[in-house]
Image 1 (cartoon, protein in one colour):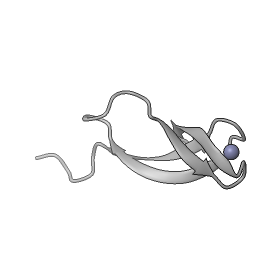
Image 2: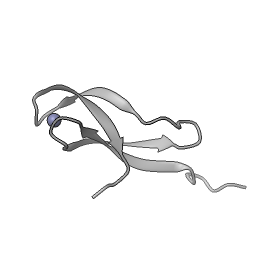
Image 3: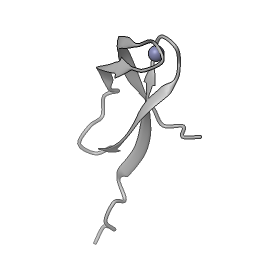
Image 4: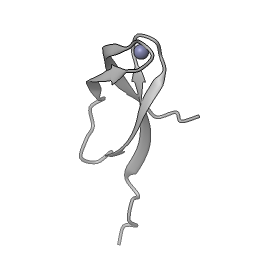
Length: 58
Ligand SMILES: [Zn+2]
């Protein structure tokens, strides 16, 4: 039996413009292989920017 949450990775969503990590989300690595690229509001840029995932959480 696989442990619960074994394949779930916590990752951040980083603004591609200012490099700030604005969101934290979780993802199942088995179900989702591709890198995420989402358009989200960045409070630092004060506009909608593209956010990509970053697995490095400080
Ligand atoms: Zn930004």
